[in-house]
Length: 107
Length: 119
Image 1 (cartoon, rainbow over the protein chains, first blue to last red):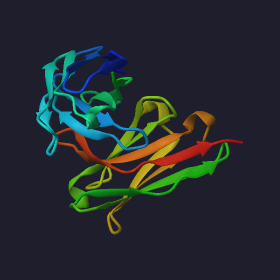
Image 2: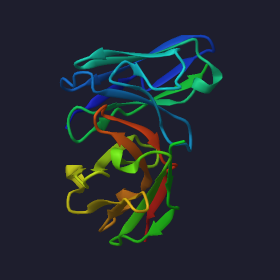
Image 3: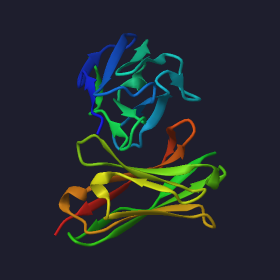
């Protein structure tokens, strides 16, 4: 199975900051990577698919990049509603697997 | 608007079975698949598999082969996930999601169903 390693596991930042979360795959997954946002007790929300395509309705301050094994999610200008846990998922090989998550907290 | 509404929380004993439903609305059901994912307490997500609502084709996580069955009822626009021989480590929130097999994405998610396995 493909392993996804997210870093950091925890991230503390202030409103207006620019933050970057990375996701590294244990083998080449092309651009079949998605990013999700999850808030406590809520279902995950798709932010980005195909490594860099913004899902409809997601604010443009979210962006994704990467291909192969290294990927990043960047949030430019943190808003209060962005403090949540972020997960990456690979959809290149079955079983589709997820990273362990990155919890973004207010500093 | 697209909505996926799941059945309610359940408590089961080890060895029992549970069937979670996921009712879809707001889109052509047979144009998409349904993915099932779970999240154990305080843990990350685990992909369980998916089913095509068009032809019933399934792909299950190897770890659950033999214990899980995913089905759909196109007349009621409902997907089901049956998990047998429950163990304590099956305790989790189970989610369904709409799967676009061409774009390889799961875009709309159900609200989640908590399944607790306890003696």
